[in-house]
Image (cartoon, rainbow, N blue to C red; front, side):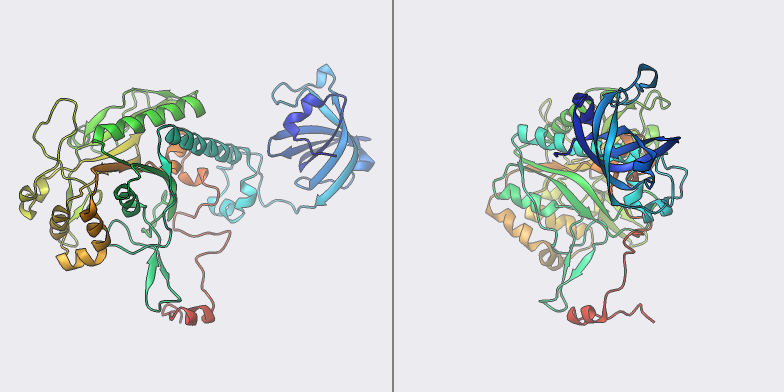
Length: 471
């Protein structure tokens, strides 16, 4: 007999059905036993004899054949979709027995130590709250794709094994067995690839991208995360901000209709104003911070191009070196500012240079950022010189991109909103780990898989590596 999901059983009154799932609860009433069976779509009550259900225990995986019957009025439960019916069991098949769970899964789970939950994440994910979070996450990514395709973007995957470059955080590196002594790097973002795609003529690119950063431990940071990565040709800053705004307004209205966006269009707040008024470049501008359904989006613009690294005694890019430096002089009304000339970009005035960079913030959290890109190889070499790199080093690390710019490059820019952070903020979750299926701990460990872990000596030998950390 074909399986019927629990949510579909109210449509089968009087019919025989076959359901399958987990025993959620068992309630004994003498000769009659009530059990609740849970599957991916809901829960339904099953009535059976004591003899038929005598061995059943919570979290056992079962298949039940029976007839769908309407419950007596006094026993109906309007709080659930299947509350008006029950299944009179005729046959029960046990697929798998279960040990007693290490913690309760019928609560929100906040009261349980997170390390304990992450060790048994496959059980923690049975929790209704986490199941809801991941289902909503799926809906968000589905709608992002629909929106981007409607806007005539092309979804293109870019490599995971790539080249280590001196920008942003530390790279995760992967040794090459075939080329001893050399390494791939996992991408911190698809930054260079998406710019190369603009040179290739794919004027509107996007992907739901996995990104990897080997950063120092922080409470709410993950070594791997997911972002919407997009790039557009022949655009100005305001074009990208407008597209981003329309996307998030659409997501909130469709997936989270109970939420209220405080202001549309989203405010454009200069970096200096944000730091002066809120002392933060990701200000929480909600008028009522006690309202869990209030969403205050804003774009932070006009960031400094460079920041001084006192420990290293050098300038570094606030966003990344490929950001176009903003021309402070006014342009035509409604247009984004143009770029600086090469002669105006010097180490002596690095502290005064502004970038065509923008961040999207929500309720005090940065949920994305992007920029208009610099495409002049000479200006890029100057930027890297200000950051302390020689022309030879720049050519060694980024020669492939600088060479590509010599074959006809359109003006372009992009954005990279984080999917994990957005969903966590909208759902009022305390951490992005609550909206990721299998997250790492705050110190980058996977307690369920016990990683990172050592590899076998034979693997080390194949890779021409040795483990100096091992005593």
